[in-house]
Image 1: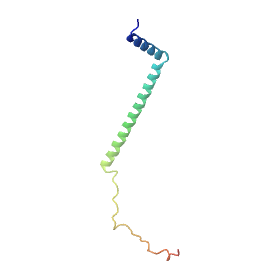
Image 2: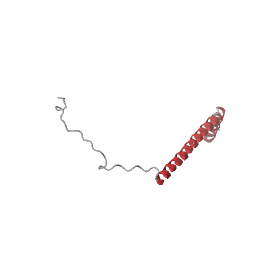
Image 3: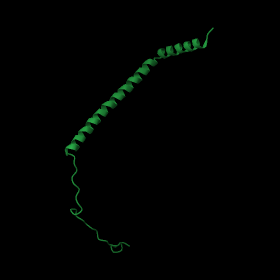
Image 4: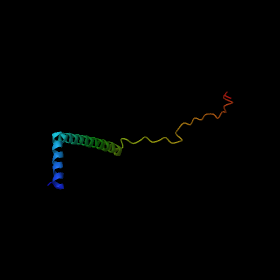
Length: 92
């Protein structure tokens, strides 16, 4: 009397009916809305970071962020510590 297709179709209808009865469609919808909001926030942050990086790059290309030249070895003051053995410093 009942073939396999009828049993599967009946089970599917019962399953979908239970999901609507238990409110799963609202839970799924709120989860998807939350995910969409999180993705929108990440995209807004990425746009902000990109704008900040472009501003830093523009400053770098304009020369405003150039480093000071490093001092040459001849311009540095050299202070040498005397090479004294521990015994001569009073330590044994």
